[in-house]
Length: 290
Ligand code: GLU
Image (cartoon, rainbow, N blue to C red; front, side, top):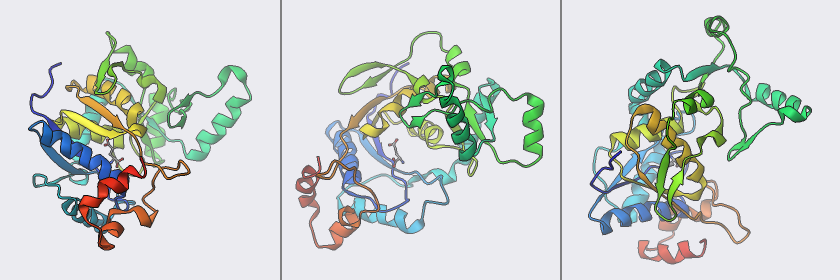
């Protein structure tokens, strides 16, 4: 499929805490890439998780990015205002018979995994986010599903990965700006949750829909999401969307090799700007963690 001719990048933080140096690095890479290529930089607020996202953190994001000297078009897309778009995508997948309800609690999944470790032929498969879902709810009949739903047991919606892959006739590729064409390998994630029990979408679904609706051409994000690009390529295929180019940057780490965390106040942009530092000093600071 053809790519959007205009270069559009985005920075898409979740307002679940204050941004830190790693976020500033990511935002600046996106901003500079767009600026250097005559493109556009977009800010998106990924706030689907109403329990973790807070208005005060969203305000901090705007203040931090402004202090960094970044500019972005208004209005900013806030995912919590677009659940309809995600519902429409879910319904497209549902019509293709690719979704199933999953009633499992974390405890159920843990117990199933513990059980299967005892049987060598059923050894659980390891994916990039840990052991993949062992498929407990996949074989439920339509009646069993309807009964559980009617009795009010909360459920997530999962993609049936095997069924989804059976619809892919030719191998899927996506472009990594550093390493070139990548053969998409979404199976490593298993039956991904596309709508959660507590809200009717997921990171993976919303991000793919928004990148499409906002005509993003280049996604520049951390190396920790490299695996996600494999899966996002599959979702684009199933939903009939164009694919994009991706770049995965190094993650900032402390001297002991730990990733920066939002809870570490000393490296938040807010604390850095409130200490009287200048935005120009940030590049030198970022280098200390690269
Ligand atoms: N909201 C996601 C995060 O903060 C964005 C990930 C992405 O860029 O796709 O990690």
